[in-house]
Image (cartoon, rainbow, N blue to C red):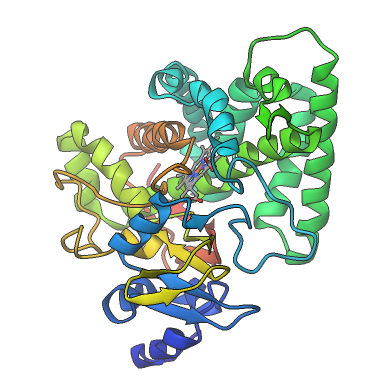
Length: 398
Ligand code: HEM
């Protein structure tokens, strides 16, 4: 339990670190403090970086990839031997080549075709616990649905492999720290072997074939490892992120009977509920960029080589673009946020994520219209550059 006062947060102005445990413990309070009092915080971890917290600065940097490059990676405090994933960790024109071939699998219409299946899986998961009167929502639902959809429909792996793959991805995302790197290694090895196997099979015309066909890098076919790293980005980009957002949505519903009533009264507000979910329960808290030429951003003079953090989670709570930003408000006419990023690296999976979050809410509410947090419990989180809800205990009358 942290007994520090709000004033303690001023230590973050010049002693910022995205991995500071204060983010886990006082997430919203820290974000609101930074937006209001510290538009640009300074980190002294490693070579250090400047963290930009206001919407206008974050948006400007995210759009200007020439000045603020992704090529040194999205991680601010990368571990030894860190792997660069693609297309996240490259700049145009190579980045554009990959997005050109990957985008068609993630358009709004491509994703709409998955809705019936998503609804069926979501319904089946809720049916497993509905009669029990309680669940741990993260494990029982949110950690499962994104993987089921991804691995059955978008990046189809043999069904027999799913259990082990799920287990390793779960360990990497949510398990004890010491187990995470080995679990990542197993997922890497699995996906590498999976791609090799598929390369020896006839084309199916799916995303895997497009990744295997690859694109040109500097005028020559890209290396094999880039194809593996694209596959990793799709897998790790889309699972724990959507798990957290779905859990946030159901937590918001569990905590607020008026919100449940508002959505029941007007189901057309569901789309706004999804946007409010990702705005307030942002799974991607912040990403790194490297400054390529001297520039002033947010009043701070930056030099070539400086590292910066774009605090997407804070920018989505900036009162300059969102009135009463702490409120989960399904009556907003427009929800402005940076939860899916801005500019060329904007999330490729945003339509899929929206579909999954909406389906998760609708199928749950349809079967369990009234529910609450298990008394005496609160969800637990883990925060760094990504934020995850580790558990969410719910109960309802049966
Ligand atoms: C609520 C769920 C999700 C959130 C909040 C989210 C957030 C983000 C953000 C903020 C970025 C941009 C990073 C940057 O600016 O450097 C991003 C990129 C990306 N996301 Fe998502 N994401 C979600 C779900 C998904 C899903 C479902 C997939 C795929 C199945 C996915 C795959 C990717 C990939 C491949 C990139 C890299 C795009 C690029 O560099 O061009 N994400 N995501």
